Amino acid sequence: MTNLEKTFAKEIKDNIGKLKDEMTLEFAQVDNKIKELELKMTDIELNQTQNVNNKMNSVNSKLVFKNVTQIDDENEDSLKDYVHGLLRSIELEIDIMNVYRINTPNNGNTNSTAEHRPKPLIVTMANDTQRDSVLKNKFKLNKITMYKKCLHRARPIEA
Image 1 (cartoon, rainbow, N blue to C red):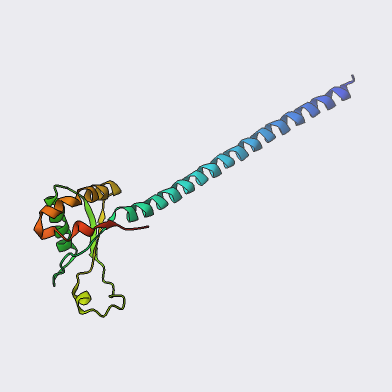
Image 2: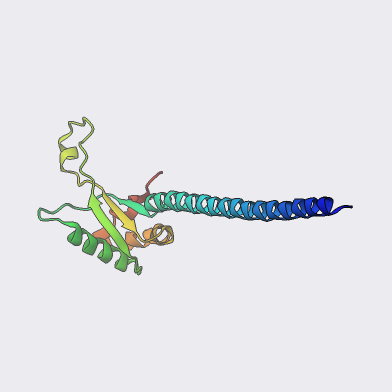
């Protein structure tokens, strides 16, 4: 091999080494980008799952209370107090998140007694296990005349 061939071979080796280093760097950048995108995709999937779970929990932790007498100056706090008293009477301590009365029309019913019937209450509890404990213990209200009709027909809200 002559000097020219040796320098030419050395230049080729150097250039191949540089190309190898550049390609390794490019592959590392591509791998990092792929990992970053996979992480973003996992986060988005997790957020969607949490949103679905939150929607399910918001429906699953509700009960309908019927035959709760309506008063004139009724507000959310007075309804919460009433429901707390009702639940304490069956020896349950439940976290009530929200209580409101459904103000629906009478669906075309012209019966005069239907106009004076109290509208149902929607009670949102902290979780569905609390709702289930209320449903399991609602038979205890039959012994208490004040609440006899109220929770007898309590039912979970259908999704």
